[in-house]
Image (cartoon, rainbow, N blue to C red; front, side, top):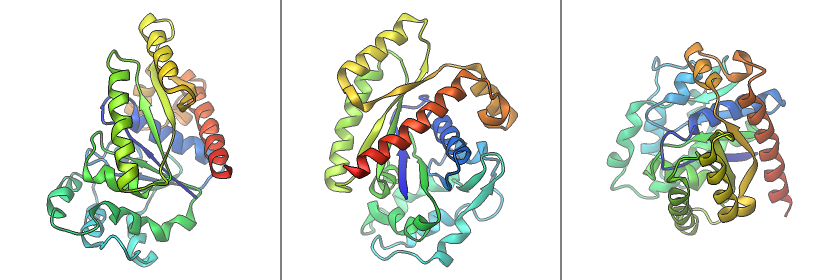
Amino acid sequence: MTIISLYNNKGGVAKTTTAITTASCLVQLGKRVLLLDLDPQANASDAAGIGEEGNVSLLLELLLTSRGSDPFSMGQVDGLRRPSSIIGCDVIPASPALDQFAEQAAQGTNREFRLQTILAPLRSSYDYILIDCPPSLSLLTMNALAASDYVVIPCDSSKYALTGMSNLITKYNKIRESCNQTLEIAGILNTKVEMRAQTSRLSREKLADYFGDLLFTSYIPKSASVEKSQYAGETLLTYDRHSPALAAYQSFTKELIQRVSTKKNQ
């Protein structure tokens, strides 16, 4: 079982789209998947067709009651999961209430390790748990990275992508040292790429020069189908099976599986 966080402290890099589409591609490959939406904006939850009905604040309650050391029982965490017919996997939805976590847990102990205890009883039920992190290095993000085996960093081809990535890697190294010394970067995924545009080509070349093998061979082209599928309430798999973006995500998903397998066997 593998837990993978998708994180970038820069918004607009297709982080949530990558989480949703990768989850659906893993399901297509026969994998058991849990998607955890840890972003208070709850965009992944919305894309999965899960609204705010019911006890969506249960995740916040468990984060606040966790002592960060003793795992919860399956009975305590089972109510977190909702099936998503859109993605084809289970989802732990987010809500704006998660914004309260950092403030309410300010005086608590083991604040960075609480998600770890919540996910512990769920690990045996899935092949992959994907975590859609907030676009900031918040306490929620630190919990996600502390609980994860790997992190995937989506990165667009904008002018400031390389500068932002260098800063992010520095923060990752600090978190790895203080919270999770086994956390590894699975790779950097270049998104919203327009290979006919010189700026995208130059940005990808710079990413490859700077990060080398950390950059996934697969990259995600900019595609109108992505936004259209979101408005249609579907994944790319059901909305447009011939989309170049879907083919790219399918290629990325297979590359991700291979990378994780190789790293585990090293």
